[in-house]
Length: 484
Image (cartoon, rainbow, N blue to C red; front, side):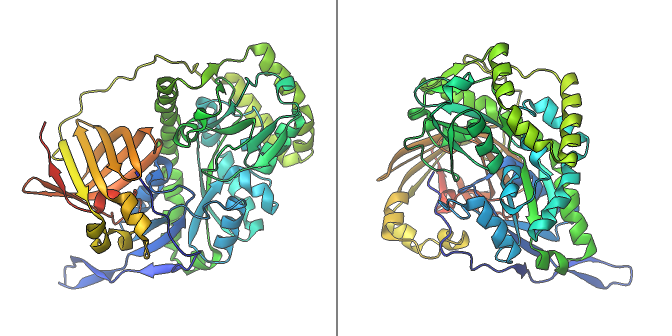
């Protein structure tokens, strides 16, 4: 689906307070006022948010008893070549309340405490990443962000980054020499220079262009269509994970009560297990999509080739270990690594079993038709902050939308003047919320959340109160049951 971006630079309310709602009566018959605070959170994702962030937003609501909500600002700093650096600056300046950037980004502002998390070829499996988070190291590293003038909230596990080659496999140092590799972060750039390549810094959703290779997670490789131009995935080479560092504006954080601050930080810690599971689960459908497309070959490196790459990175580790704190953290991770199981191989032809999922009220086949004139009157754009849609937006979004929901699985498609696109995935119902997790298609890896209701065979989606929403398209008009 199409994801309209949020116009305007960053003219956002730093802290919104929703009108008081009444709590339950006391023994004396009085009522205590409750206020719900909405915190805006900048995110690079366009449209739906990653499952890791959805879990964080849900934990914030739970830990605060519904008194603190997260309202995501999607596609933040889109196409900005300094996207993560400028996002840190935006939070420091109070232009948005919260944000996340990768652990890789903090070197740009002089914060090196996260370097052990993204050191090359160090944390290379999800079991090892789980052990590192269980050890408490990422939480201790979080204090370093104060040097950048922001307040640390938490660190969530992220997916493994892989290497995709355009015209040949990348399995030994010689394959990197003279090549241009798309990368994110200073340490990633240093890694590729040590291997003989020229790194070029990228931003989210950037096209490959003339790059010879790119480092990215599997879901982004599929979602951005990188395999249409780059043909060789170094399948068993995990360069580093992409942990998500959540941080806040100092002014906003100071304005919160002690209980609200505690809810934010406790929510981040509580979201770690679910975020790790979500990161791991991203890979399977992405590999399935790569295999189904048949564009990219999955290339396994031998143990000899992996050792060659590690030896070539010795200068990087000499520089990292010149910092005593970084050296101690690397040694601890290496000790954990010796006891961690190896990563399972990626290969085509795998299947995933689906357990017996009960039928839900939204199960069935649904159709929504939108027209240009109908979209001009639709309040859905405004609800998502898209206040000035153009005629091109209306024409691109007008069309026929189809949605099939069956026992936890979904298929969706849209046919419009912009063409045809389709997604597959899973869904679950939580009260009046439906949570879609896209596992295949253009929007792979995204999580969409809506409020739902059904009246006389008409299904309606609305923006959720949690703020962890997907693209506005499903909310344009009611959906009608199509049968079948």
